[in-house]
Length: 355
Ligand SMILES: Nc1ncnc2c1ncn2[C@@H]1O[C@H](COP(=O)(O)OP(=O)(O)OP(=O)(O)O)[C@@H](O)[C@H]1O
Image (cartoon, rainbow, N blue to C red):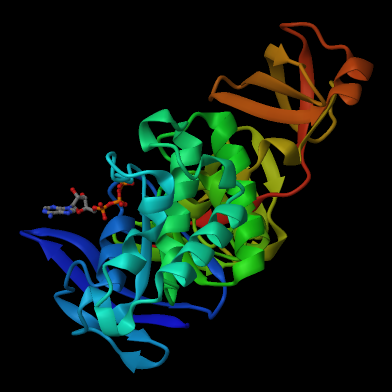
């Protein structure tokens, strides 16, 4: 089912939690709502679910206005960070719960319920846990059961609010890959709330970046990562080196450094900031007179395939980070304190326009 939200506004007292949010969630896609803590992700999810009301704006489900529909009518499935499975019920009974409490006229016969629960247990690959109680499951297993339980009633939409937030990093990674595979099998339109950019970029078909109640950017993960639409998105989606200065006729002048910014050829002396990701900074031996940023190596960490290097700019205006292949690092063999030349392969410059 496709979902659309139009001009959603929500305040809590004087605080604006959602400020005119319009989005569309394509049928069958897995969309990540990504943003820092408190940016309004959960509030938006609750409004879509029907658990909270917007002050204004509309929620369309399959093109129909559902703004005044009850949660139950919307047929959404939920999984939360701390999903409370019923402790006194076995895994099997937990999953069957939503099917058994349906009104008699809509309820499946007991044998069919058993069949569906069995199928769901196989789907989440935990059929051997059917008779266990939640207290004997790991956190990751509980979340998979929570997901099976949400899917049991065949929701038209699946809403996941930081479902793996409480788990340790390794389990989290495994589960998000598992979720992706599961989604590829089921294709239920799903919205996934997270503040973890890696998680959003790895799992989602579409990423929505939210900041302070406003949508900053929407797009497929690769596009949002490669072409951030704003300084906020750039900073939020990964480590970045900043070069603050003035832009004049296609050049960013940042202290003694001049960096090319060809897309700003027509700009005349405006303040601007250059954004360069650590892996887009080449590290070369220092040669006097050669174009680049002169910096001294402070620290290197070359465990694994990539070497993380930290530099102090020679002009004293801050630290820089570079990420280069460990092989290149070994070939360069720099020592702490060595002077090197850094060259951005790619830089995005955002102008600070007068408001
Ligand atoms: N019922 C409420 N009453 C007052 N303020 C609220 C209420 N619910 C949310 N807020 C505020 O609205 C803002 C957005 O909250 P929301 O839970 O949507 O953020 P979030 O992006 O999901 O953050 P997190 O990742 O920390 O859960 C927060 O500043 C929060 O304090």
